[in-house]
Amino acid sequence: MSDPKFKHPESLMMSHGYKPELSEGAIKCPIFQTSTFVFENAEEGKGFFEIAYGLREKGPSEEMGLIYSRLNNPDLEILENRLCLWDEADDCAVFESGMSAISTVMMEFLNPGDYILYSNPTYGGTYHFVKNVLSRFGIHAVAFHAHEPEEKIDEIIKAHGIADKLKMIYIETPANPTNQLVDIEACRKVADRLSTDEDRVYLAVDNTYMGPLWQHPLKHGADLVLYSATKYIGGHSDVIAGAVLGNFEVIKRVKTLRTFLGNMAGPWTGWLLMRSLETLKIRMTEQAKNAQKVAEFLQSHPKVGKVHYLGFLTEKEDPANYAIFKRQLSSPGAMISFEIIGGEKESFRFLNALKLIKLAVSLGSTESLAEHPSTMTHSDVIPEDKVLYGITDSLVRLSIGVEHYEDLIRDCEDALAAV
Ligand SMILES: *Cc1c(COP(=O)(O)O)cnc(C)c1O
Image (cartoon, rainbow, N blue to C red; front, side, top):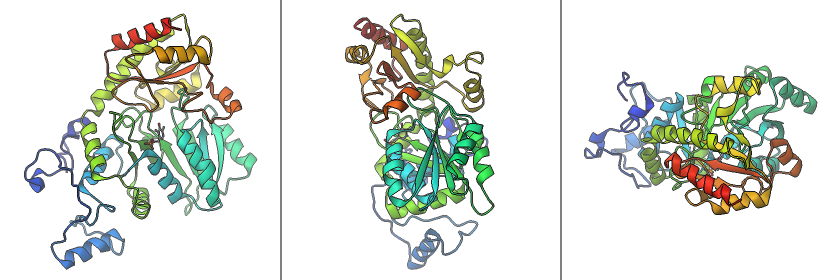
């Protein structure tokens, strides 16, 4: 596809997988707004279907043809090829939302009677799906807390007596909203101990917070890496989408279920995300740079208590998290949460006084966003768990964008003055 001498994904985001000669020489991939594709002849149609339905293996020089946009579409296929470069994955499946990517993976790899072990806190939609939807299909869930080490995870599995029923470990790291880290390699070891030759315990990692730039879970032993592409990948707060990456075997299964659930992304979504990927690295790099400046400002402010920012981890104060950070992440990222001295009233004063930073949930976009986890994104977390995860009434979460950091700091400074 691309010349192998160009190795950096950011160099290939404008061209990889696209052949201008197939589209009138257009430099950009057009939006293939079409539901179906014309076969040259009946024999070709037959051949495409044989491969699509797995009736025979693809020949060595054969390319999978286009059939129908629920199965494949150029805007999706090219996007999927480009996403593979960041995580060095064999294959990728793109979805119409992060939740459809997550739910499809869980439905494909879990059966009635199986258990899923997940890290808590986890994204609210994921938590709801595991608790209220999977349970209706006889799939049970057990949680561990993001800060718990490998031995403790083993203990939890033992205490629940689920060693032979556990089929998936599902983690989110860093955990939202306090940036607690989960050790991917440790989870791989737990999964391997419970896997047999014919029955693998799959490890799935929601990499929305750090990917695809700063953390590559497949390299640490994950089988599946999942994204809400609504966040950094899309990056402009204008599209909802999701993605799953892994080896050919697992993604083939995911794509097959996607075909029958019909929750693939449409061509417009594919096109928007291709456009976003061209600036992914410069956006995320700038966002991380800004986040460090804002975090440093917040930490020095008298009205601010603890600042949860991965750049402040030290070996001395938190050796366990520091070791995971060093191994797993190449940047502290651009998500910050912090405590305002006081409670809900003080947090709300701050949020209501912000001008440049918008008061909204979601994250990873070009514009900075602020929200109050306890009453917004995490409002359905039970009170005991809120205490455990540090989701207090005084906690505010910031997603840092690409504005000038001086203006972001000015906005925070003025809003803190209003508290
Ligand atoms: C937003 C989000 C999701 C859900 O993605 P949607 O695109 O909104 O469906 C899943 N996981 C994490 C960590 C998220 O932030």
